[in-house]
Image (cartoon, rainbow, N blue to C red; front, side, top):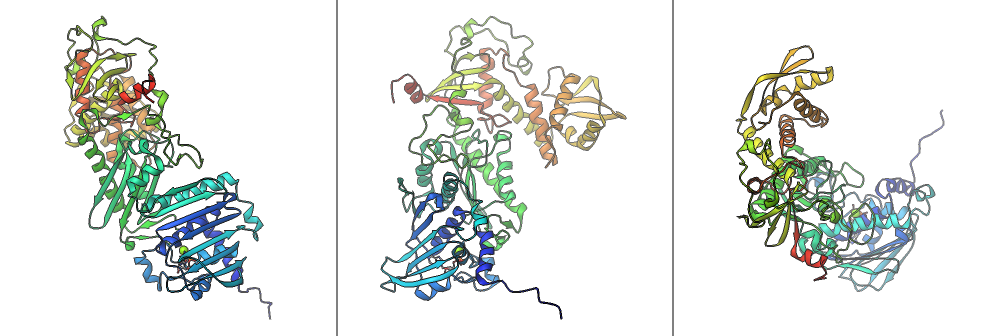
Length: 612
Ligand code: ADP
Ligand code: MG
C-alpha cells in the first residue's frame, strides 16, 4: 500500500494561510477591525497605532460588544453572526460575512480582545498568541469592544519582511481611516500615532462637514454635489468642478453601499460623464457612494473585498454617466456670469487634515491644475495690450471669417460693455484676455475659450446630424501608409459623420472632397494629415462611433481655434466671451484645461499685503 501523502492542515496553519489573503499589512488588519466595529453599530471608533502598526494596532469601539461565549467563538474560523446561509450573501448589509478576519489576524499576531455587552456588568478578555488561546479572564470596561493586535507577523518572518517603513505603513493606515471617515461621516473617529497628536473627526457630521474637516474649505470650494436616483441605484457625493483634475487617482474614492471598491464600470462612468471636462491623462476628483440592493453585485470575488462585480455593469456605467452629466450641467447653469470660474492662488488651507498625495502624510499641499499657484503668468513680460494702443491689422484673422468684424479699436481702455457681469480690460501676451467681475480679476485663455466655443458648435451640429459640409473645389489627395489606410477604412463612417469627407481613391491613396464648414480657413493637406495623425495617436481602446466623432471634433476645434499670438480686437474679445459663457461647459476647453481663471480681490489683497 502506498504511503499516505495527503493530510489535513492544522487549524492554526489554515488560519495563517487565510491571513495571507486577508491581512497583507497593518492597514489591512485595521480595515477588518474597523469594519467589525461598524458592523457592531459603533458610532465612536478610536484608533491607536504604534510603530506604523508593526508594534501595535488598537481599535476601541462603543458597539454592541460580545458575551463570553461569542468572544471565544469569534476566534474560530467561519464563525460569524452576519450570515447563516450562502443565500444571505445576496442581501448582505454588513461589511463582514466570512468569519475569517479575527482568526486570521489572531493567528499571525499577539491578539487581545476585550469586550462587554450592555446586559452584563463586566467584560471578558481573551489573549491569543499565534492562533493559540493563552488566557481568558474577566475585565472591567465600558460596553463595546477593544482589540489590540501586537507584533503582526511575529511568527511568519517571511511575511514580516514585506512590511515597509513605519512612515509607509502609517500612510496606508491613514488611507484606510480616510475611507471609513468618508463613508461614515456620522461616526466619530480618532487616531493617534505613537505619542503624537490625536486627530479627531466628530460623530454626527454630514458628509460636507466631514469633507471640510478632512480636506479644508479650499478643497470644498472646488467640488460640486452629485445626487441622482432611479429605481435601482442612487448616487451621492461630490465631484470636482469642470476644469478640476488630478494627476493621479488618489482623490477618486468610490463606495458601493459605503464599501470602498474598485470597479471599472463605476470609474469609466465618471470619466465618460465628464467627457471633455477632464484634462487628458488626468483623473477626476470624486468622492461618491453608490447605493443599491446587495443582490445587484457580488463582493465575494476578492479576498479583501476590494473589487466588486455588478450584475449589470453597463447599467451602472450608464447611470453614473448621467448622474455626473446632470451635476456638471446643473452647476454650469447655476453659475452663469463666470461665478463658476476656478479660483487660483488661494493660500493653502491650513485647516485641512490631509494631503491626498500618494501615500505621503504631511501638511495639505494640494496639487492639480486649480492649485498651481504659479501657473498664472502675472509677470508682465509682455505689456498689457490695451485696445486703444493696438495698431496692427487683424486681416486674415480667422475670427473675421466668422463675422467678427474688425471694427475700429476702442478709444479708452476699460470702457467696454458688461458681458454677463464681466468687463474686458485688455489682452496680455496676446493670449490672455483680462477682464474683471465683482469677485476680482478674470483671465481668459483665448485659444482654450475659442476651442470650447467651436467644439460645442460642431458637436451640436453633429448631434443633430446636421454637420455643414463645405465641398472643396480642389479635393485634397493623400498618399497614406498601409497603417493609415487601415485606420481610415475602419473609421470612414465616423469621419464622414463629422464632415470630414474622405474617400478611397486607389490603393494607398485617399481623396478629401469636403470638410466641416466651420473650417473656413483654407484647409491644406497638412491640416488634414495633422487631424488624422492626432486621431490615430489617440489609441483606440474604446473607440466607439461617438467617441471617435467627438475626438474628431475636438481635433477640428483645436486646429481651427484662434491661437496664442492671434491678435483679437475688442469686439472679437467680446464675442468670444459671450459665446463662451453661452456654452454648456464654459469653464474648460475640450481637453479639460481651464478656459478662465479667477483671481479674487481677496487674493489680490493678500498678495499686496493689505490682508493676511
Ligand atoms: P465577520 O466579520 O466576517 O463575521 P470576523 O472574523 O471579522 O468575521 O468577526 C467574527 C464575529 O465576531 C463577527 O461576526 C461578530 O459577531 C464578532 N465581532 C467581531 N468584532 C466585533 C466587535 N468589534 N464588536 C462586536 N462583535 C464583533
Ligand atoms: Mg469582519
